[in-house]
Length: 260
Image (tube, rainbow, N blue to C red; front, side, top):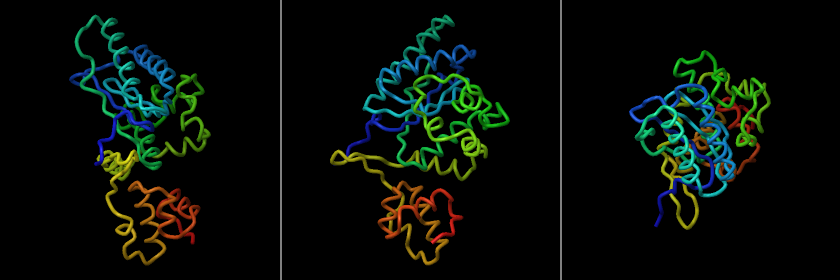
């Protein structure tokens, strides 16, 4: 029988945590720096990469990658140590966090990159800044301003896979309603483990995505939709009996691709 996905499964995770009753968890920049220091220390201990982050006043977003099934241990250290610091500094007692942190397991490349745009757009959506990458407590701000980043970010996708020009292009456009709807859909996607293999319950079967596709434009749109539904590029290429490079071109250019 399938088993429920363990929250600490190795891989990419989107972590969200809020203050109790939505109260502020950061009263100054020093508090935000302290959380980053605690995250860095715990990440190095757990061999975890911090790919991106956004620290707002009453909540935070982290995009992390774990190598082992130790997410719970990593987060327990982060939240407990920061709460201890905050309560001692501000002479308060009781719970700091609203509830147990929320985590979403990232199941596809498209989901991963869309999530980066979402995290980086948080301050813009909250009308705190006028442009993405200008809010001090996101990783893109650190990169664009050539500031020191914590060692746990050394292998971040934003650092390893982008130069400044392509990163600016990637983050330059505000996140669209279509992207937000896509992320909501992915968050609701059901995941289970069966026979020690991770399975993702897609919204549609392959046949449904490509049913009655009779033009190149419709085929390319169906490829894009299947990829966004969580199907790997290699699987799509195999199903359609086309090259993986063609699938990659369609995915990268969206439904505007007009190649063979």
